[in-house]
Image 1 (tube, rainbow, N blue to C red):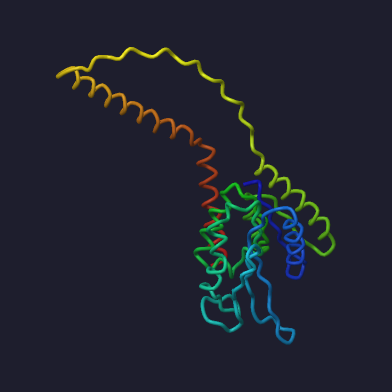
Image 2: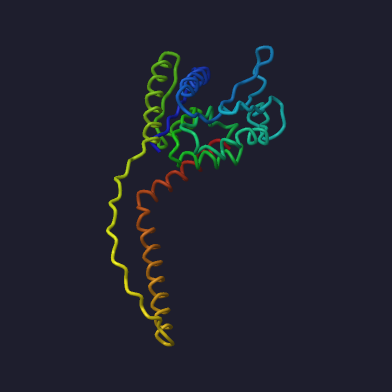
Length: 250
């Protein structure tokens, strides 16, 4: 989970501006997936939020002031349009070098599909950079590095974030070269055994069946041993934190 980077900050601290800069920089070198949620203003007043897929450019309505659907403040959330816009990302996130999400917030978490996607994504090997609301910031510390954005240190945060995320991308893309396998010497051909008859054949079949059962038992016990207590503990912590986040946002 340490390969994720999260940004938080007060309203108008410059999170969105920083995220736009990060997306622009990453797209020059890497295959970037994700989405951002620009606002729409009419006569100087914020009227709606859109959702835009970074890879395809496909956009949809996330929320509209006075609109229908589940409400967050004065905004009605268009869950159907939000989910249809991010569906390609949900299906293909493993194909990207890095995922950028702006943001994981109250509006987005009204979607059950998005909740499930975030749970799966944060357990995957794909590096993530996401902005989160301040009230959730402490919950995300266990999922990766957390930076607070302010007007004064925005440029410093940008440099640290780029260094972190590029390092994480490089770790993911490293392929360990396995040593070439030595050619095994061919064993001399075994003499053909004469086919057995009657009771001998039945005994042989029983022996084979018993051997198969023993092998299967050994395999299943080996798999169980592989899942170490630490891994189980991490999974339990992850699910507990995600449940807490959903409760805070609901």
